[in-house]
Length: 222
Image (cartoon, rainbow, N blue to C red; front, side, top):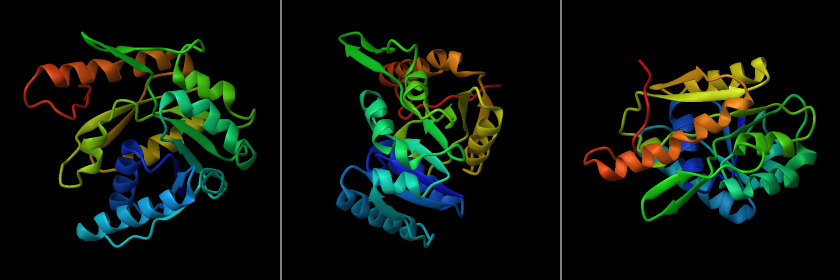
């Protein structure tokens, strides 16, 4: 399977690219608004994988070209860029693709981080509103710490919650998630439940900041 990480030059994109590159044989494509940045990031991630004994070729393209080459398109962009990014690649998407969003809206004040949900109800629902009609949207990977993902010497042992209204699309994303060693995918219901999932992210950041030894915190449900 071919996975495109739009905005894949950022921290979340790097972490997911390295994990899929290390643990799977899926083709990983890095997307960016600047194709030169995408090429450079793809080469950098390939070098990191090589240093860990995994020889892989990653490719980099402008976001639209990356989406056009993929079966699964991950929006590894900040929440305030998701709608614009979807609109910019809409012509490259069709009903056979799955659009995945890990973004969670947050704002920070002197007390810490807090959920900041858009008018659509959640960032995931905002993506669904912006996506072309036949393209299913799945929310996933919201609560994963980018630093933990990118550290290939560190075992994960954590869960990711999935939300979506298309069961087949959700199953495809769950399979991709569990292709990463130590990551378990759990079904959290439909898109209407995305706000609750996204709100976990600022909570985890606050807990990590206030407790020694809990940096790059994740969740595991037992």
